[in-house]
Image (cartoon, helix red, strand yellow):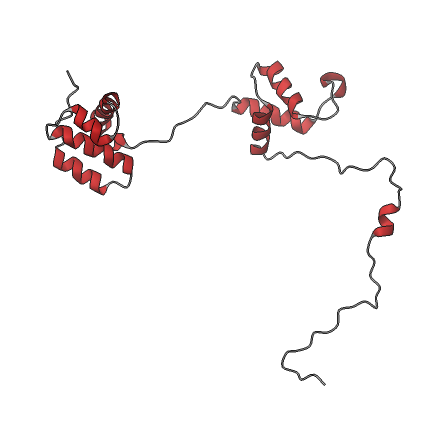
Length: 181
């Protein structure tokens, strides 16, 4: 026995709603349900909607519960974040305070070290990519010192810097309207 549609609507009203709708998926679902109101079989409605009978049943349940607005496809919420606000606050404190070499065994934080710390402290497994994403969302950036060659002479950079003599000045710009001699 198929689930009946709510009696508050009729086929003509659903077709008007489908015509007004800006969401193509909702319009398709409304037209399929309008066919059911007209007396078509659920298999015909599934053919109109381009779906299976089970999906038409789901549409009927959503329509009965929420009306035409229940047929708008929403964005999936996705997986819940692994780190809570409490975890992020503690992580921010750890990054700001920096590691204590005697306690943490490192002289600077790496992503893998922070992942390990979160696991040891809260028993939450976080990948390196997720930790990087979380830190960037908290406005932290990876900073590293500019590398220096081990055999670089102390004054070598100064020798190659460009110096401009006072005599080297830009010439005055000539106006386009003034004639040239």
